[in-house]
Amino acid sequence: KDMMPKMVGHIPEREILTITPPVPIYPSQAIRRGIEGACEVHLSVSPRGEPFEVDAKCTDQVFERAARNAILKVKFAPQIRNGSPVTVRGVVYPLEFRMKP
Figure 1 (cartoon, rainbow, N blue to C red):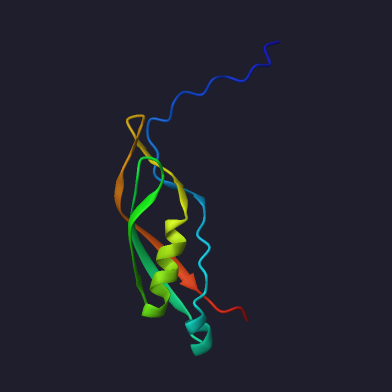
Figure 2: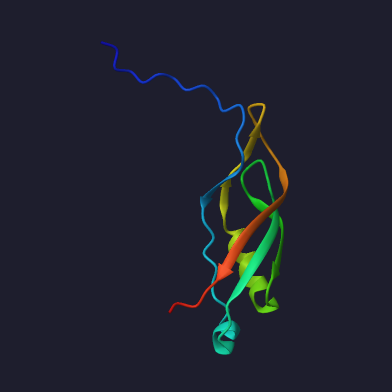
């Protein structure tokens, strides 16, 4: 019997995927103020899976830098179109800042 795995062809189409999720650092100023927040982080992803043109819009401005920095460290599997990785613009990544109960 042939026990060799079958070869899988190249991926013709795929949306971007998050490989390493963001780990936002809770801003100390927000902790002192006792506030939580939600952000929409707008970004583009390069054919190498790297985020760029990152901009965060948050319920409170205190979270924007932390959200931006967290997304800049994320590694993505790039979007594939016709078998090739492509740049994707207009990605929106939601992030929440919640205090532990």
